[in-house]
Length: 280
Image: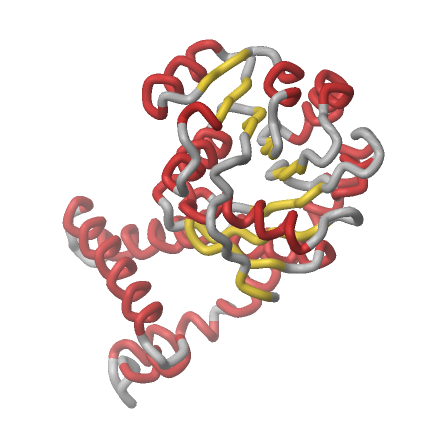
């Protein structure tokens, strides 16, 4: 795995196909990374979503995928995976030679797109997560068969304002999805459990929520800024015979590590199942 960062290429044009949550986040990120409003077009069937993005970002919009794709140097494919085949059929013949397809649709390998796009079209597969909405995301990008280092750098520049961007091999994308793609949901579930436990010990919900959220924000910031790893930081607050060590011991005895491993394995298994279902 390598860090993937690059300066924006202001002469390129971007078409974001799909104006939903992630498509909108990427359009906003591209604007923040240096692309002008005139260089970014968003296409979606939902007129209300397009109107909101046009108002917020000043970008061009259209309900015609082919129209958007025809004028783009970079196509960001942010369509729901179950709609991918129909969407590709709608614009594939409009893709110009040399245009890059950057896909954030989950579960579909680069070969799925390469088989449906004009011969030689470079495909870059991306696995983002929802904190990209506030520029705090973690996104992995992987090259398809025809993607060069220059294509990867350009894809990274499009995503650079959404947070961390790293480059991986495509066979690592499933693992990335289980860790960072689905990771925010695991975090929220654990925060919910902490809040409910605090309430059970007598705290009001509002107070338990405030304490839990700030604790995790602070702990994440400390981990990010520290030269020590999570294990070392955990040990610093786990005094022998103390309350923290008692809690961690009870969690371990209850199978915390096993529960996490089983959960991530289930996510990976479902990702592979979805790839087969969607490709069929």
